[in-house]
Image 1 (cartoon, rainbow, N blue to C red):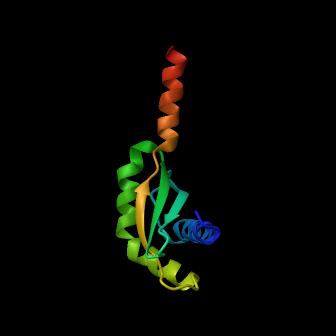
Image 2: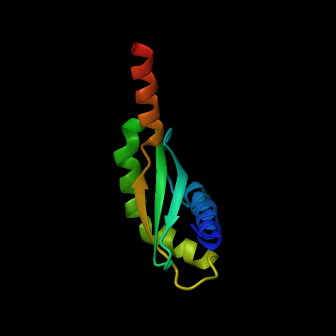
Length: 109
């Protein structure tokens, strides 16, 4: 990955994290964190991986993000001074829960 894309990913991660924290009204006890950002080399698309806690609220969290996508995209576009502005797509990051499952299985051995 180029240094430029890496910097753009970091910038998008920071800004989207702030937007989610400030702009979204999530129900009590639900937390959404941006764990990873993957922007295409042509800067047209960015895949944002989020962790949603607790796990039983993943459906609620991803539905809320998709419902508020235009608001999040608009706020991000105002903060980014670049062209083209990448189009956001949210994905659930299951890395942590998979790691917990592997750890649980290893303990059973």
